[in-house]
Length: 116
Image (cartoon, rainbow, N blue to C red; front, side, top):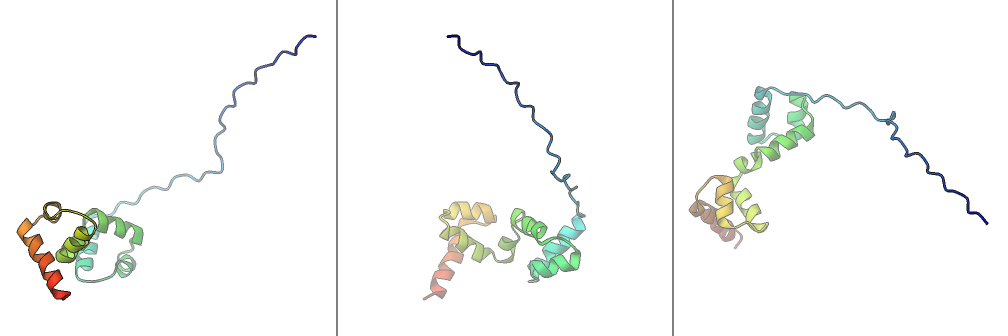
């Protein structure tokens, strides 16, 4: 008995995905817009209100807030405590917040005393 020869199937060629949407163009904002958003945030205005006022998506504002560390500028002592609770060393906190280690220790000590 002869065995049937196996024929090689041609490799599947990838078909272009026609259901994919075209990529949206990224919108660029003027530095004035970013600066105004930061100023409003540091004054205590919420990101949702800033977004409505300036016409900037909240996700964009959140990215700016994270990348440029707006929260740390608004409340550096609170940021120091948060970083300490997340396991950062005092030296690393001082470097990140651009203050001395002595200042970080003073902030942390004040928080501990206020909780007593």
